[in-house]
Length: 241
Image 1 (spheres, one colour):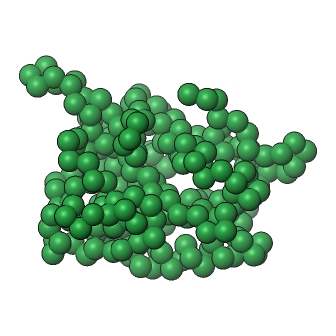
Image 2 (tube, one colour; image 1 turned 90 degrees about the vertical axis):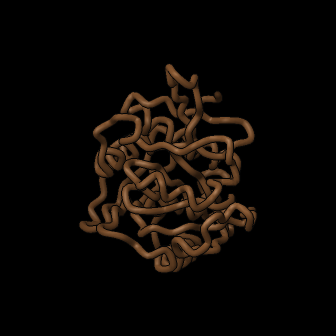
């Protein structure tokens, strides 16, 4: 794996990034509308970049590559068609969804590298809990190997990635399973992959909550995306990280 390098040109000040943790459950259409507005504002230079952490009520989303046959239970939860890349995925309570709105025109106009950085960010956050998250060729997302003395080893997905880029500003992002109801994934073929299962931090036996994961994500962000001047959502106070 290539070393993740600082994205900023030399002699520039850190980019401001707002970090917002939304309380309660956020409806999906409202989240998409808010992202659309923020992307336009970032592009116009009237708002800082944003990392927005939310939790959704139970729902399925269909990306641009979603195959209708992978929606196994179409009447179970609301199904939202979305412009992000990828196939079907599930969102629900106990899963941390992180919407990442960054300006790649300033950071480096390389979408593939951005996705690689998102993967690295997830891997570093999971490592804070001694979980080895891994990439797999041909399978989007982050995976963990499970070793079962009775049934051998298997690989389960712990995090999904689906992004969209508009005029070099990113949105949508990542979803990491902390303690969702894993049975809810049975209504779809997650990301079109039926040969593997899904897991979560709690399913792996870890006493981890959303605030614990949030802290790990916050700590790992600058090491992947470069030095950042955080803009607190509630206080508007800035500090360097």
